[in-house]
Image (cartoon, rainbow, N blue to C red; front, side, top):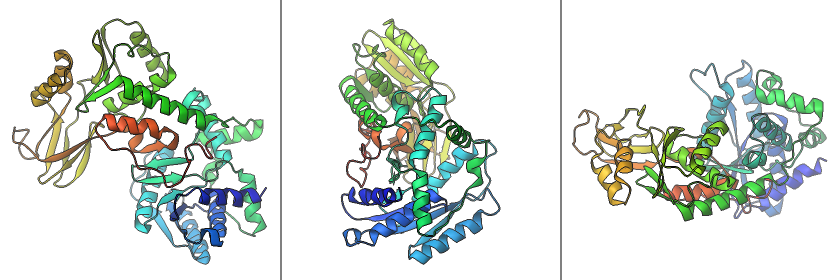
Length: 444
């Protein structure tokens, strides 16, 4: 039903707390082109005349014709009076993991375009069909239960700086194409969408031939509720010391049969270990067995030591493979995936603390067992002027904990848990989305 396209665009615009500037990520394919046209049509009414549209096309330079295609999209936008930029992925491309790398670069360039235009958000043309494919892919990886069943979020915060919104998650691709055909508008088909080398293309073909449509009708709401409960459990049972040690109350330490607590604890462990992803299923099962036994001891998983004692459970980074980072004057770098460090003045060298020093004393003063304080202090960052070879001379720097699972991609239905994790590690809450009820609307 083509009218579903305009209805979705109108519903989306009504969800904004206030009018703003919207950046449309447009590739020239039917989904993103339909989104641009539908929003442009809706903005032509008096109800939404305080909104404005801008657009950006990313040229990944992976096909010879991509530059001409991006230029054609720019001409289409110009005909509608919509300002348009082309973002170029320059430099060498990776030989492996090309789609993941392209996705990351695409969002980097879109975020830059949003800043250039002063846009309040980015919108993409992901559809109900894309949602089915995402959940089907997760099912093949045994991620289709619990959080994985939610699929893509209707809103995603990228890089802590801009919200990416998906207004068409309830709209079928067939309806978008009928909508465009009724207006005499064509679109481009990316051949990579049919390339069986890529997982999504294989899953898309399989769904088309089988007629199977994975359900996600309640997935978003269930995941938002799970995240809220996980946030409450973290707030009630876990403390973080100096961004180095997570301390869990003894009574809560072994409750790994609770899926919300398990996800909450694994999220914190990913931060402690400087990882963006949670440990895998096999690792979590092994760790759960250890923690549920109630026995004292230590187990390492995902670069994190789980130190179980009568006084509680303590998580800290294992003292192996700690890097050395050099950053220029006034620059920012990420050390060990755990700390964002900005030089205030001179160039810096950051490595691991060799003897514990003041870090150890601070952890002991916080009430941690001496053994935990000693081990955890050895994985603290030691910051020195770059030309001082780790001399004891103090160097000025701003040090901030990095929240690996959420600082790059934060799904909207996980914001309650992400905010609590950020506060535990001494950070501010994440920026709120510009639309109302985005955590449940269009998310199932």
